[in-house]
Image (tube, rainbow, N blue to C red; front, side, top):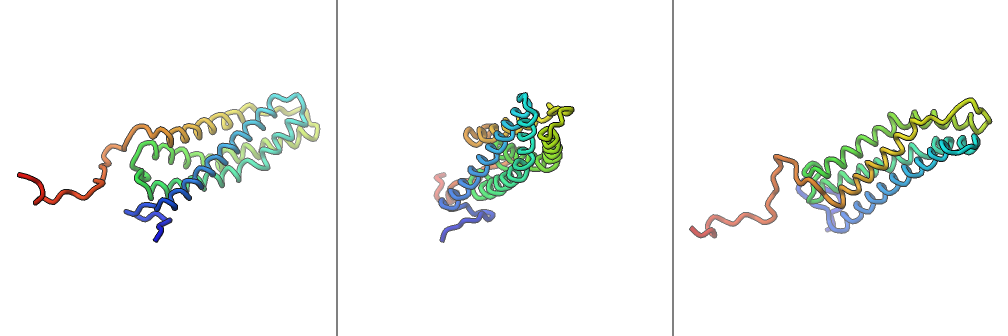
Length: 187
């Protein structure tokens, strides 16, 4: 019988782990791609001389960025949590996993709480620019999220590859084989 869901003390089967890992990687790639597209649109709005181009770029940001990015972050979070619980790495056993989890949770919250209002304002500004209102300017504060987010997402990717820092202190490894019976130990 193939186990596809992680339960305490149970590991994912090879097929289940590969399916979850694929979902995790695809969600992370989608999230990163949306972040890069967001950055491209923001930079385009900032550097163009055309108010209509800047307006269109900012309106596009308001249309596509927040909810697809938030959805990808949730899929990444859920699949990563199940992978952590169902594999040898655990959810809170290694520093690199904890840091990735913290990045994911922090960014998932920030997408809705901080990024969404800013991008909605940017989309409204974009509509005004596209309509010919030249009295407004594209705010430079949009550069922060589009530079920090991809950098930290790339950090999460690198943590997955290199797995630095080892175990959290105070966490002991469970033996991979059963202990040798006392009668079998020479005295």
